[in-house]
Amino acid sequence: METRDLIVALGRDAKAKAPSPAAVLAGAGLAAIVFAYVLFAVLIGPRPDIAAAAVTPRFLFKFVVTLA
Image (cartoon, rainbow, N blue to C red; front, side, top):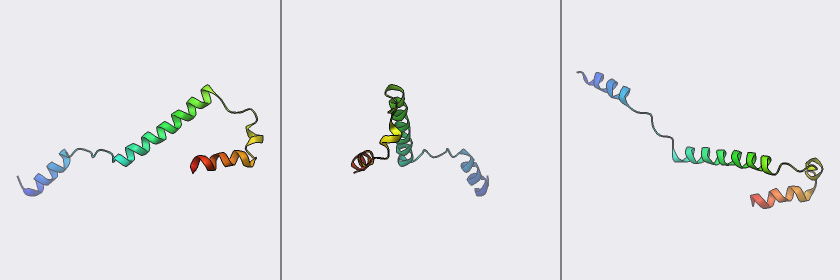
């Protein structure tokens, strides 16, 4: 067996690399956000006056405080 043939055979036998921990964490975080949103929407539901409440500074300030 030639060296080149050995390299090609080893390349074919190589397994796929596992995803990086950062990719796994990002996927899990995204899945958790989607799950929490769906659970919230099913159990509580949106406010009936969400359109009127969304334009008030108080409503927007809640997001600023949450992100901080």
